[in-house]
Image (cartoon, rainbow, N blue to C red; front, side, top):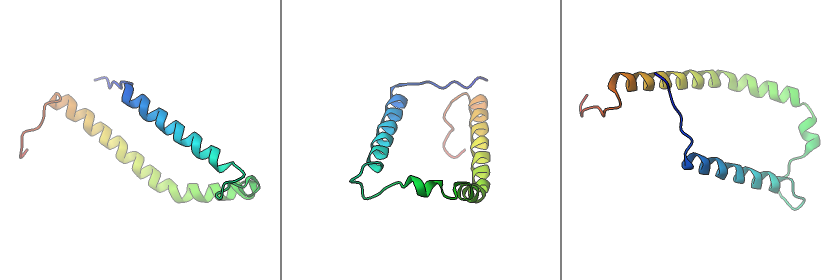
Length: 92
């Protein structure tokens, strides 16, 4: 069974919307008049130490979520293969 993913107008609109929001946010953060600023010097100090702590704290959750995603994908593919895309009867 081959999984096919279509790129329709809804997907394109969602991607475009997220890109526009990201560009606006980044543009705002680096303005002089912004109250919320990203200090480049503060980012450079201890970046490796900070990133290593973040990775250590989030690694186990990432692995669990990745495994759950793979299991959901396998389950959905098997359901489609065995059921043929037909809706299940009520109470099944």
